[in-house]
Image 1 (spheres, helix red, strand yellow):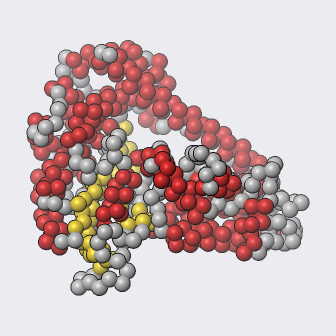
Image 2: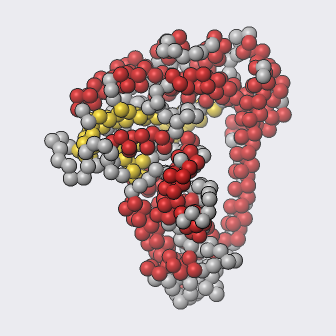
Image 3: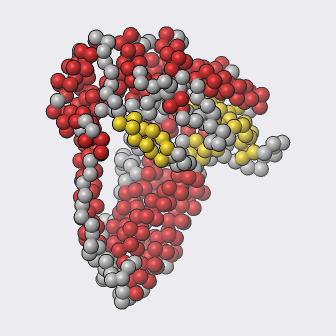
Length: 497
């Protein structure tokens, strides 16, 4: 396939991806508007928006680009072959960082994003084997969950392990170009002159750094870290690096101190400074009850997980995010429509049925594990069902084994649902609807789970309360039978851990 046809293929794929995303947004907005219209009597009008940068240039608009894909591809291919290609000015979007400050996301026009994806794919295909096996980001043979498994299996073997945790400040925006360009002809990487020309075209208007938000930068990020990875391996250190998030471990304190020197040397050479506020530096990871001569900690956070020598858990920040989303779904369905006077809510429970509670359980279950039913997962766990499709938030954490955390989450979920039902009952009473003896408001906390499971809707257990432990058991079976990649959420690489 010649270059023009390759570019056209990638342009169409990029445009189709964005069109599908827009259609999904439109459909989701429509469904939400319908739900809201049934729930409250003054639902706001549906407002469909398009990204503001679609108006800057037509080549940001996927519908336009799809129609012109062939002619655009021919033009770009000719420029690349003549060494004249330069991407058009991207749109710079600022995103709030969780810890404060802003992160700049570079959004290229669709044809330029397609060129970036094409050359990233080409570069990765012929150079993937040169990257360290301890580098897990931006590859099609490694992923975040491989990193977690490798870390947890290794540190479980020692009662005490020294951990070095490092994070770099503005890693993508600070990379020294000279340090990066030196890698093009060193360390066995295969990079053609055409590819070098395209890479430099994407970096031409920058004094330093690589654009965050385009595919080719993903290859460059791993390329610039090759020397760091190689130095750590030569020093006999175990580590896991996911982009700029790096954790290094060793039972030997002298070895872990050497890791600090290696990190500092890389920081100076690559031009990326260590973020002292987000880097915990060196600490001791000890099993519960194990004596230590310096301050120790029971676990450390990496990519959404909390890892200790004995268990893998959801880190506290991610757990809070899950709780916040569930609480929001319960509030939106059960409390918000009836909390004001006059009554806005149109769904009033009757005949031991509360459609709003049904909607809430459906949405919480869909959020946690993709809407799977208790019966479906139970059959899968017992071997009566050959496979199920894992989706939802919990499929981003397939390697959990902290059963106590999951039991605590089940207890929290039951308690918050029970409290919300009590609050809903009290609010309905203020509107002169006395439902204290009706289901589900009459169910005591200790019987709510079983009563909801027995309450069938059209012959299905749609009212059942989700369970963290149940999805954990199903994920565990899936891991043993099919492996990580068949169980993890397919969007794990894009998830904001």
